[in-house]
Amino acid sequence: MVNNDNTVSFEQMKGAIGSLIFLWSQIERELSDSLDVLQTDHSSKHPHGIGRRLELWSYQLQNRNIRRERAAKLAEVLSAHLSKSLCVRNQICHGLVGITAKIRPEDTDAHLTVELGGRSNSLTWTELQEMFGWMSRAGWLIRDLTTASLEPDHQEAEKLLLSWQDFPHQK
Image 1 (cartoon, helix red, strand yellow):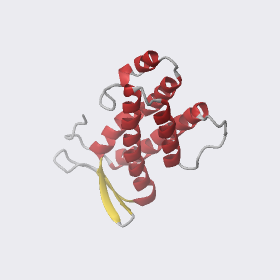
Image 2: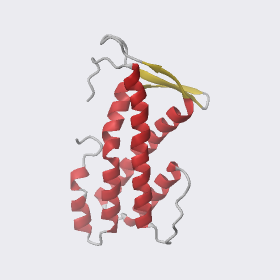
Image 3: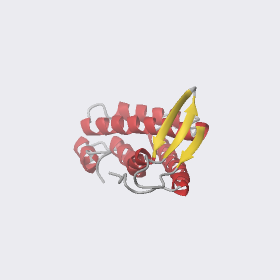
Image 4: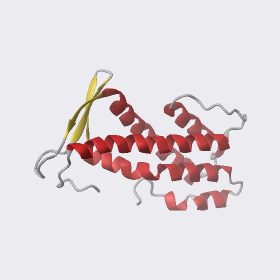
C-alpha cells in the first residue's frame, strides 16, 4: 500500500513515466524470450506490437495448461493485469497532456492527465505505484509460467508456481 500523505514532486511524476516505460521494456523482452521457447512452428518472427505478443503468449499458455489449474489461473490473472497496464502505457505514451504534483500532504494526489480516443483520464501517483509493484515482478512470472508450461510433470509445474498463488498481491 502506498502512503497518500507524502508529497510528490513534478520530477517524481516524470520519473513515474520513465518507470512505466522501463518496466514495459522488461516485460516485452521477457514475452519475446518466452515466445522463442514456446513457438511450435519454429518461426523466428514475433508478432508486431506488445499487445499481439501478449495475446500470442497467453494463447500458447492456455493451450498448454488446460489441465493445470494454478498455471491457467495465474496466466489469466497476469494477462488481464498486463492488458490493463498496456492501456495505461498507451494512454501515457500517446495522450499525455498534463502532470500535476502534490506540494502539500493535504493536496489531492499527484496525477498524470491523458486524453486519448476522445476520452480524458487521470492516473494518480498512488495508482501508478501500486501498478509498478506487481509489474516489477511480472517478468519473473512470465518466465516461471513459460517454464511450468513446458514441464511434463503436472505436479512439478504446479509446485514451480506455488509461490505466485497470491499474485499480484504478494510482495
